[in-house]
Image 1 (cartoon, rainbow, N blue to C red):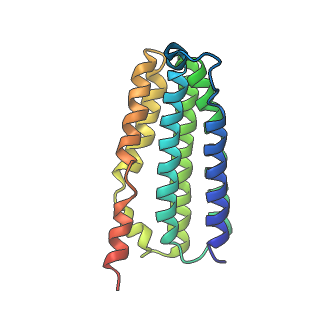
Image 2 (image 1 turned 180 degrees about the vertical axis):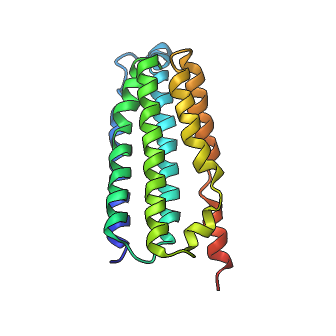
Length: 193
């Protein structure tokens, strides 16, 4: 089975996720700068989540380029990833509206953690379907960022009950680790004849 429908469906879901998040940014009914300042936590949570959706979209795009065929395992793993990412607007809104309180910030971390694990499952499904010498397997190598991210999310979830600002710093830090698309895959495509 080809991958075109999988890519189109995934792109559509990610676009809807971003649309839902931006619709949660409510226009203040006051024209003063202080009215905008009151929305700062909501805006910051939106920026963080927009970065994450963009990161997933970029890396998902690169990862699917390594895929020659799509199996039912890949389809289900992709759907699992999209399910967890679709919870991002809720977690984003709850965290921002409550000014990064501990429980909403922890839930945000749980969504990020399970999304990261779901991405890894999709990556493993693609590697399994493409054979022992798959391009994706060679490209990801030891995948230190993929292994470090869930550990950092888990730490952030625990730290949020100590100080939510620590968890927020970790969430932004992990996003910065992934801000550029996965160059390992691009390098392998450029090296192949």
